[in-house]
Image (tube, rainbow, N blue to C red):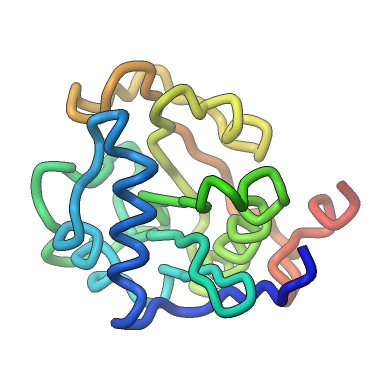
Length: 180
């Protein structure tokens, strides 16, 4: 990959691309939420949502918003307000299929983690869907088997979290991640 990789705030022009990436990733799992719900999640916390570009092309995004620990968005409704919380819930992190396995997801996660630290969040949570718990576990997330998301999140779903590491660098990687 020779094109420049850029992580930036989501702009209004990104939503068609984000909705297409989300639909392609989640429709087969029965989890596609649609553009209105996606936009609502970014609207309540624009400072913690990002677009990922390779060259001029949008190839990924992350939607994260403050949510109380052990809770998660209702997939049946849009978000209306941000919750006061020291937990940042990573609702979506999607990379276009033909750009996967190039380290872009890890790069976007490191950036999000740095942003979480800069905004005072103490942990990041997520709901691993579609058998993705192994991926998230390899990135330091721990399963909370006692938290059972509703059926709307699909089968093989696990609520997970990890602490925001101290010492996150300006480049978005902790000293441990930089050594890996």
